[in-house]
Length: 154
Image (cartoon, rainbow, N blue to C red):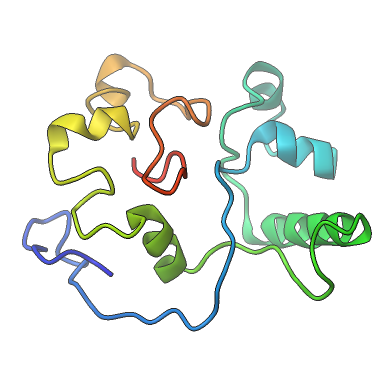
C-alpha cells in the first residue's frame, strides 16, 4: 500500500509499505448516496441535498451516525436473509479501501500512471473544481476501476 515514488509534497506521507489483509470483505459498487441513507434512516444531514441530488454520495456524516446506519442496515438485511447471521456493515479500513481502489494494479491509479486520463475516472481539480463544479457529483458518472467499483479516485 502507498506509492513507490512518494517524494512530492502531496505524497510524502504515502510511502509504500507491505500490508496483509487477514480477512475477506465486501465493498459496494458505489458510495452510499443521500437517497439510500434517507430511505434507511428517514433523515439526512443535508435535506436540500436529498431533494435536489439524491444520487450523490452522502457527505459530512459523523461517526455516530455512520455506526447507527451500519447497525440499522445490518439488522434489516439480516432479517431479510440477504446477509448471513453475524455479518456486519462497516466502513473499510484504509488498507481495504486502497486494495479495492487499486483493483489488483501496481500503477499510481487503477487505470494506469497517466494523469491525462484521470478525468475519465475521478472528479478532481481539472474537471470539477476548475469548472466551478465544487460539489459532490452523482455516483457512477465516470468509468469504474478494473473491478467495477466507481468513484474510487478523486
